[in-house]
Length: 141
Image (cartoon, rainbow, N blue to C red; front, side, top):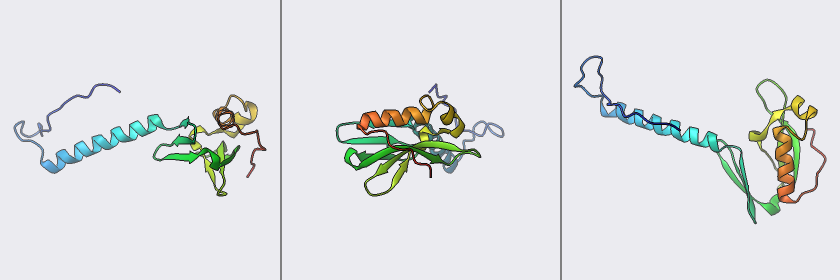
């Protein structure tokens, strides 16, 4: 990620010998730790791991581990986007819930033009082959 410079926590604008108070130092260190944690989570987002009994999906702020037997289908469906239509893979679960993998969303127009090369299409094909599921009709809700 790069180097980290060690800087003295002093208020050199007024007096170079006067250090910042402990609450300010704690705030700076806590903010730095939070920023590194968020960067780490963003880098790991969108990672899907299969093993013999489960599938693990890493999101930006939440990891989900789902037993393989709980997944009934994988389909493409609508996903919320920033002002335009997006599609994303959806995992259908035995409980009737549907889990949207928004990390693999792509613009709807891109998916319609090139379904096998868009990020959503690639993710759906990989999930279906990894789970051994047949291609189902994509949900249009």
